[in-house]
Length: 251
Image 1 (cartoon, rainbow, N blue to C red):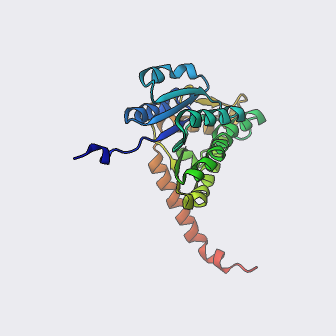
Image 2 (cartoon, rainbow, N blue to C red):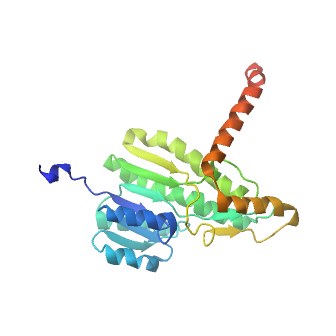
Image 3 (tube, helix red, strand yellow):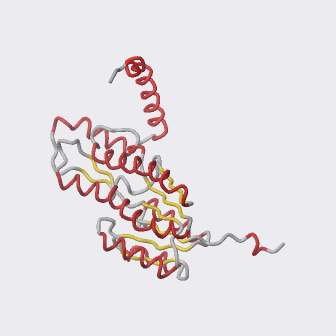
């Protein structure tokens, strides 16, 4: 049997937030299977082990997803180095603990710039390339908090809800171009999310300690699937309870 006929053409990946956690694990898996990778991080020196071990297939660049110039430069480097981008993984992000009254404008804007707008900028930058290729895959790392709202982390939930809604609509917009969109809502894994990647509001209001504390505990011990099931059951119960009122309303 001619093995060349069964050989899958290597894909070119661009992954954000490759220094630790899911991003690092995915980067290593991609390279191990023989694909090409533009690995990005705010501190690219943390990626030296990757590029040293895979000098022919891995390249590391600096990318802060809140900086438009970094995004364009990373995409340009991927094209110049590998000729295309087959898979974009928007993994960079962080959690924010704090009730709405506790977080300030800086907290809010930074959270949305990183977890939502940064992903959108990357998507909008690679979409013309993927359309021209007639193929591509966009993977957005979300959270159970993108489907279930938790007291004490309203801004984090808001950013993830926005990412999920946009991703769902985007999938329909680009399907005819051969581009796929995948949302990932990971459960509890042993990453550094609860350490380096988890921030807290600068202001603390005693009245919110119970809800913020509960939110922090959720981040540490989350059982995403059961929470999603509870949310879906609640939505169905609410729809059933209000169905007659809803369908009977007049203009």
